Image 1 (cartoon, helix red, strand yellow):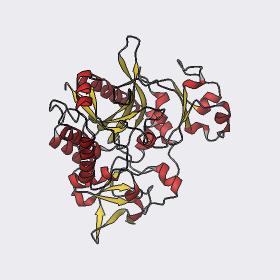
Image 2 (cartoon, one colour; image 1 turned 120 degrees about the vertical axis):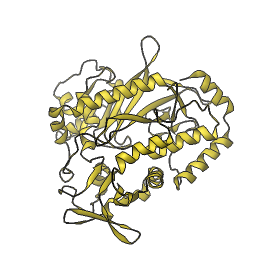
Image 3 (cartoon, one colour; image 1 turned 45 degrees about the horizontal axis):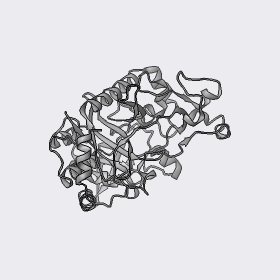
Image 4 (cartoon, helix red, strand yellow; image 1 turned 90 degrees about the horizontal axis):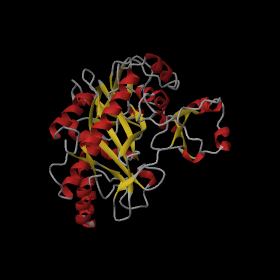
Length: 403
């Protein structure tokens, strides 16, 4: 996206440098990265990042301030997962954008989805730093959005740990040792002093929660929630405590926000970067959003609360749409598909980029964009699990020029 930087990187790239990158990532995350790591970062102009960050923030504020919308979203939370004492705003936000070609030939963002859930804040910081180190890149490039290393981790500490002793703060996940995001958990542990705990290993006594810390039963005062309800339902996971109880605990990322701002939000958004979208049940009743293409090849069907691209269907047929039961149709989104521009030049041809803006929102502070995550791909699906057998694709980092 910045031609001079792209040409310079491609000319100086070597497989040996990439091998060092991979070794360093494993070392710094105390794990083995089980994701397709792209050979290249993406060079992003500051103007484009500001445009995306401002758009995602505007959409988030619109939803958080809309009481009627929040009531509708709350109704989508499955029974048994409606957690008490929901905060006034989410602590974490992500906004994913495709880049399309505008009428004048310039690049313009289009929203893929919003999600009020933590992303890999720790791993992305390490990945961007290692691209800079291993490929000896221009120090003028920024690895975060306007923060140095110390400021970035202090901002994360404020949101994740708050005023508590880190020993009383846990990162909660479903079978964390088996998650592909384990490298991110390790970075958080090392930088913030917290522990990662399986949701089934937490114990409840009265309204208080406890976990085992090196053989000592330790109270939990704040939970950095990374558990996905969809995964718990699919695997039949039962938490070690009552999620719905009025507990004496704080949440860093209250679980209800995962449902409150998600793909469910898209049809309610009012912003020029939002593609035409409609719930499947409304579509079946004849609703037709303005600007929605009549060409079936331009459609994409998404389950509302799946994660990492699970269940997405391109160009869904009438047979497929009608095969979804009437009771389940409200859980699907029919959306205008974006035509990603392949504008990252690589030795294997032009590649598409999807850019995620990562936000923090402290309990008593303001929403702020702090980092980026980039996915590179050449197929229909941009997720790293869908690009394993190709080169110069996968999970990447945005390096920002001109901040």
